[in-house]
Image (cartoon, rainbow, N blue to C red; front, top):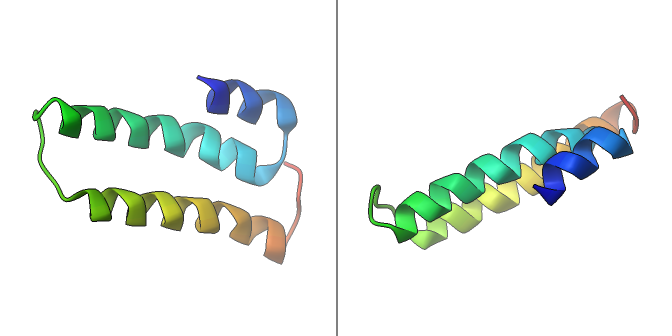
Length: 66
C-alpha cells in the first residue's frame, strides 16, 4: 500500500510505475508462498530488479515528473 500511496502523491515517473508494479509483484509472491502458483524465487527477484531499473529509464531519458 505504501508504494501505491507514494506513487500517487510523489508524482515522479518511477514512483508511479513502481506504485503499480510492486504491489502486483507482492501479490504474485504471496501466491507463491501459499503454493497457489509455483515458480523459482530467483525469477521473482529478477522481475523485481527489472521493474526497479526499468522504472527509472523514463526518468533517465525524458522527464522526472509526470
